[in-house]
Image 1 (spheres, rainbow, N blue to C red):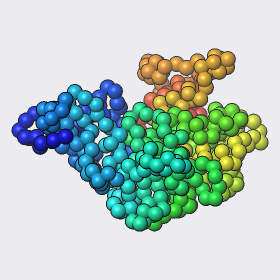
Image 2 (image 1 turned 60 degrees about the horizontal axis):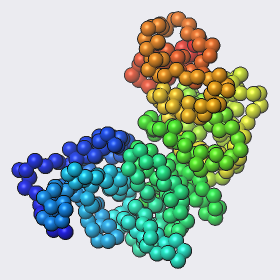
Image 3 (image 1 turned 90 degrees about the vertical axis):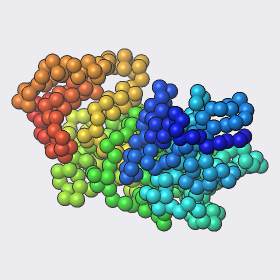
Image 4 (image 1 turned 30 degrees about the vertical axis):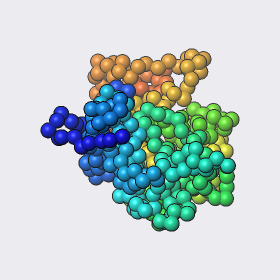
Length: 414
């Protein structure tokens, strides 16, 4: 097809306008939080430009192309992302942002990365192509990381990613839709799927990620906890044979206690809620934190209760959770996750009904509680009224101070 460059005096859109149009379209969601820490806004990272076609059914229409940071396996150096009156390809923008991130944040070189590399399944060749493959070096003999990119709101693709890992022998793989991501890890020579909270940089191995110490400041504040739980369900929880809600709540309980300890009692603010290479060590570490949390906050779980997830299942669950910060997170994050964990019928059987959050906020504003007043909710469920009352009384901007004050307030007045 013949293309011509567009006279820029014509009414065309620049890169920022195209990105805003694609991701703010009602059919998508403008969530590119995966790329917020790259040092510059998305529209300054990628380059999108218009062209017109002179032949075919799209003759005269303006099409917008995205310049690729590295050539595709086909040799192409650009990809169409939008056409006037037609479809857009947000996943292509997400792919290029991941390439930029791999190069600039993780240190990989352009000649160590392939785009649209064929994946062979048995005797079939070229029927599938991985979005991004990162290799250990520029010889491209040994795949290290596979990245599969989806458009916003897409939730599928984890099984596809696993099949790519099997076919290529890559130890690490990433599924991302621009806002949510899951990092899979296959610890050789074991054949079960594990998880990581981050991918290894150039020159690193997965064990380096697992052994790295983390502080409160390194934990993500913006995350989708409901999506994390859904991913863990698909990976292990659905087949664990245990009460999902109870076991996830134990992990939340242990993690909140660990974050509180890091904030109040550890000079370097390091957190201990993390996985090790050995699932036995991971279990002892996380179960130990859970025990300490139960000692400080008794009466929530049975005496001498332990985490009941199998060690290999716990190993998978810790990865996505260890990289997020629960203390100080948006209340809706936990509300949504809690309500998701209890299916509708289970809620009815247990007599648990959930008040919409905007109604909770309205009630708290009407009550206007002060810092010296007691707030009681005998049927608190997920604690929505209590948590929002606490937020109302302490609307501080400093997250660390707010956590300390909320803890002291909650212990006495809620």
